[in-house]
Length: 457
Image (tube, rainbow, N blue to C red; front, side, top):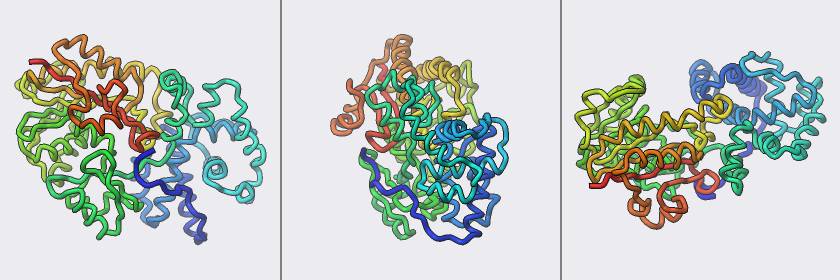
C-alpha cells in the first residue's frame, strides 16, 4: 500500500500519573456513552468535549481521540464478544451506565490495543476475561461467511454482503484498511505558497512532512499535531484535504479564466482547491442546499485569499434559482461531488457504518442522478461534467454514470489519462481507464470515484 511512511500505530505503554490516567479514562467513558446514543459524528463529539475539558493535555487528547475512533470502528466485534461472554446486550439509543462503558473500554483495549487481560481483571474482576478472549477467538469458526466477515472486521452484514458481492478478491483488505487511522493530509494553497515552501514552514513549526505521491500540492503530516492550531493554517497556507479529494479537483482541470461550477459545494473543500488551480481568476460558482455550509465556505475563502468565487443557495429539488439558470450552456466545468454513502471515507467517519441503513443507501442513486441531471444543462458545448463520490459501491458510481449518459446522450466519456497523464492513470484509474478510483488498501488514500463527461460540440 502506498501513502505516508508506515509507522507502528500501537501506542507505547508509558508511565503516567494517576491524574492523567483518570482524566483520559473519564473523558472516554463520557464520550462513549454519548456516541452510543445516536452515532453522531465523532469529530463533532470530540471537538465539543475538548472545548469543555480544558484540563486535558495535548497527549491526553490524542489518546482520547485515537481510542474513541478505535472503539467506534470495532463496536460490533466488542459488543459480540462481551455478549457471548455473558454480559447484557445494550441496544444503541439506550444510554449506558458509566460502569458498563468502562467495561467496553477495557474490552476494546484487551482485544485491539494490547492491554494485558490481567490488568483488565484488576480493574473489573467481575468480568470473565478468559471467556471474553475465548469468544474473540471463536469468531474465526463462525460458519456463515458474511457474519464471520462482519464480526472479524466489525461491519454490519448489509455492507459486508455488498463488499463481498462487488469485490470478492479484495473485500477483506479493503475492510481492514477502512479500520485503520487515516493519514493527515493537507493541500498547499497555491494562492499563497508552494508545496516545498509549505513543507519548510511546517518544519519551522515542528511538523515533519512528506509529499503525496500522486496529488500535485499534497503533504502528509508525519508529526501528530492539531493541524488547525498551526500558524500556517491560520495564515491560509493549507487546507486539510485527503489526497483522493485533491486528485478529484485535479481531474476537473479548470481553465484559469473559465467558468467553473461546484454543484455540491458543501463547506467548500473542493471549491477552494478549484479556486487555487484557477489562480483566483475566471469565475467560480458554488452551489449547496445549506446556507450554513456556504457561509463557512466564505470564511475559508477569505483565509485562503480566494476572490473569484460566489455562491448560491439552492433547493434540494426543483429548478435552479434564476442566478444559476443564466449560466445554462456556459460553464466550462461542472463538478457534481454527489452526496453518497461515504463508504470510501469510513476511516475518518467510522460511525457512519452504524448510523446508515440499507434503505437509505438504496435511495441514493436516484438522488445522485437527479442532482447530476439538474446540473448538466449548465455545461457548455465542449465543456465537462465531472461526477464524483467518496464511495466504492457500483450502484452509486458506474450505474449512475450510465443513467446520466442515457438521459444526456450529448455527453461522452473522457479517459483519465487525457487529463492526469498516463502514469497516474495507470496507477489510479479503473481497468477501462474511464474513472479515477483510488482505494485505501492499494493507494493509502480514501476510496473515491470520479469520471469526466464531455459535451460534444
